[in-house]
Length: 125
Image 1 (spheres, rainbow, N blue to C red):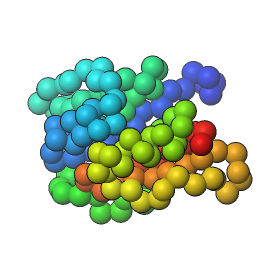
Image 2: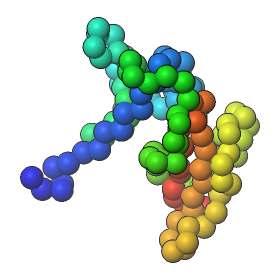
Image 3: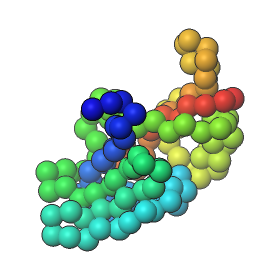
C-alpha cells in the first residue's frame, strides 16, 4: 500500500443523525453525495472528492459528545477569516476565533457542532 492510494473517511455517529447531518448540510454548506437508509447503515455521506464525511446513526451513541477534544475534524478553506464571519452570522458556537498557527504557516479557527463535536478550519487569513 502506498500513501497516494489512501483516502480519508471521517464518521461522526449520532443518535439523531438526520438533525446533525442537516446542520452540516445547511450551516457548513457541505454537498450531500448520498443518503443511506438500510437497517444497519443509516446516514448521510458528504462529498469531498475521493475523501468523505459520513454522519450516521449508531445504537451505542446517546446525546452529545462526552469527550469532544479527543478527535477534531479539520476542513481546509481558502480564508479562515471569511469562514469565521459566515459562521458567526449563523450563530455557530465559536471555540477559538481565527488565529495564526504556532508555526505561523496558516490560520486556524475552531467551532463546535450541535452535538459538541469539535471542527477546525485551516487556511489563509
